[in-house]
Amino acid sequence: MEKLKTRLDAFSDAIIAIIITIMVLDIPPVLRDSWPNYLKLSKSIGIFFISFIFVANMWYQHGTAFEEIDTMTYRILILDIFFLAVLSLIPLFTNMMAANTTRITVMLYGILQALVNIIFRALAKAIIHLQYTDKGAMQKVYVKIYGSVSNYMNPISLLAIVVAFFFPEVALFLYLAYPIIMFLMNSEARQQMYDVAQLPEAQQQDFTTFNADDQRAFRKAQRQIRKNAYKVAEQAAASSLKKPTTPKTPPQPAPKSDFSGRMLPEDLSKWLDQNVNPAQQRRMTERYSRSSEAQRQQLAQWVKERQKQQQGRPKRPKKPTPPPKDPDQRA
Image 1 (tube, rainbow, N blue to C red):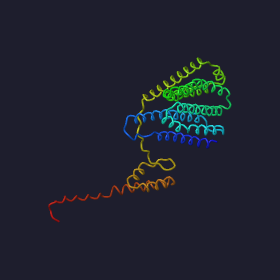
Image 2 (cartoon, rainbow, N blue to C red):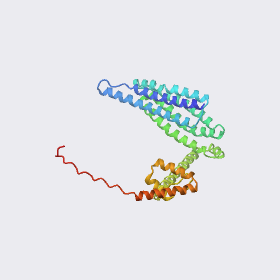
Image 3 (cartoon, rainbow, N blue to C red):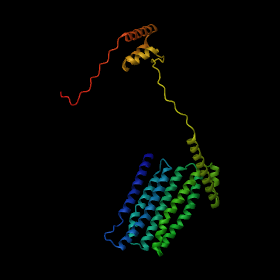
Image 4 (tube, rainbow, N blue to C red):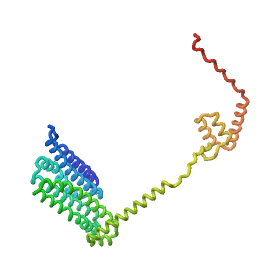
């Protein structure tokens, strides 16, 4: 199921990207310059941002939830497809609410948001159960943490639907605030789940008995621990930058040696550098490494004779450089 999970991640990202694109295309352009038309356009853009923030938040929650697992089950697959199917209705209900902002359209939009959240909560619960199969305490921790989040978010969602019946325009602000609050609370809950997962199983069991005050104290303590860890990391990074560095000495050229690791005689090495090209140097060095002591002595004697011949040979006089031609002189 690992490959299928990877393909499902890509499929989900593509669907959510298409949803946002469709919502942009549904915004009606202004064809005639008039204040009422531009006010209508601003209203459509505002409603678009409500849906955009909601869909973007669901994309973030979906991505972080699936990032915690490497495989999946068929239950997760079915829930995810159902979640994407319901989420795909957001552009339709957004367009309806922008074109005709009445209590019915605004209430239907709120009901759709609530339905998306319910399905995603079931999907996230299935992922948590898969991740902590052998840890019964963590399943209770999930209910403890995300249950408190639901206790805050469900009344807000229900309140927005009720307000939409009496004041549709006011409900739009609640729809805008809902995904922002959900994003902040879910991020805090996910961090809290990670912190509790690092504890021993006995302490995880103790966490399930915490009340609201104990949970707040736990979150505060964990934030302080992370803050101290960040300070230590910053100090370590700063001290590493201030550490004096020793100047690097340039590498010295290694003397010539044969392939057995023994150094060539200095006179032979010097003569090779002055009179023999690199290819011949390599061949002579290889031959020198395979030769016997007697052969090496003969080679050294031959090099000395060549040096004497070169020293006794008269140097060729340099040709005098011709004077520069006069540009006015005719050929």
